[in-house]
Image (cartoon, rainbow, N blue to C red):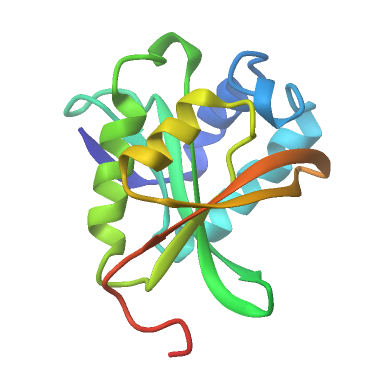
Length: 165
């Protein structure tokens, strides 16, 4: 498996992910075509920093998901969040597990920590956070594409520069 930079041509992947009721179940349901284009635009901006990636399970294969890390402000502190999506046809195959492992490996020297905010009722994403040593900080409310979410707040310490750096 490899993580490759998100490209403009990955709009089709974003449409397949964010238009799928199964993938979007925990994120308020499928996005409209306009919301999908907006999500693609945000990913292109994040891709410019090198931290929005597609998940390619086989060499020269088609991408089956996305994973990324992006800056956020949490409780007045600058830090980073991570999140991932995998096409529903590939759920349960360990793809998100391997993608998160690769992302964390890449992020360790760069970031002091990463936060994740999976839906409280998303067992697969919460299990991934547990598996990779994220600490459950509690529950919180957030949003995705302007839709309210009830999340678990996870954080994992990495080896990168201190948060205040």
